Image (cartoon, rainbow, N blue to C red; front, side, top):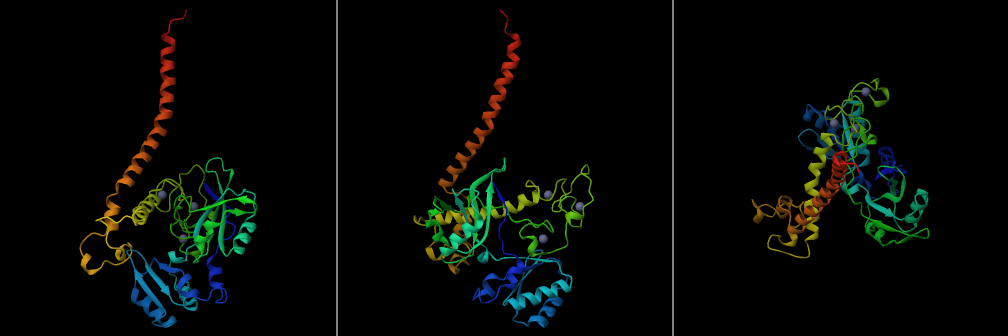
Length: 343
Ligand SMILES: [Zn+2]
Ligand SMILES: [Zn+2]
Ligand SMILES: [Zn+2]
């Protein structure tokens, strides 16, 4: 299945222009992190930012290749961005997880239903829709009675699952079946942010060079070059090893969290007391040195999980073997036919 027509998404500029009237506590919750990639001298950066927004106006966190800047007010966030553009830093932003939309899938509503009708209905029932898109069949591209919906984070988000009827249709709201691939930027082709939040140099999706895709002069017969892995495919190729690496990096975390949640009602010896069960919390002093349950779960799936993997594997094997058998049978028929003596 694929997404189509993003009817309404919040862009960075919309975010910046939001007034405090619509969101009383906006700064801490919705301000995107700013990720800088080409910093050579942190002290200069720190000095400049301090002179612009004051010593308490920002915090930094460095990882292997980036510096992440957070800021405490919208004014400071805007001022920092203006400075970064002026000083020619390459950066991008993205919404912190806590501000990312609450994603649901709406089932059984006819595909011709205008997005605005769904948005209005949900708004009347206390849900603010940030994005909505139709889902089409992944091969024949025909529209399906499915909609991807992103709600603004709120305490009542889960109430949406109680809605069973919209516009005289018996519907069902569900969690998305699969985590969507990380967003890919149409400006620099990197994963994890979108063009609206990007201030990197443009990279071409076709030839990987430092120009926007519209300006590309590559001829169709020339081979493509990936901006991320330099392979001979376009940068949006789903089989790109850069994308695979990112997906592999995020997979075990999801698995561990899921297992953690599912096992909650049945405590066993392997599960630490409830207070320490959240995988993100720092371990308490007496657990020092011991692997956490999340770590154990990530390395060794419990029996239920193994069974699921085996069943899934058998299913996949079946789907490969069936067409193979058909081909073999027809091949045998072709080989054996001429040998059969004619009457
Ligand atoms: Zn980008
Ligand atoms: Zn190009
Ligand atoms: Zn690639």
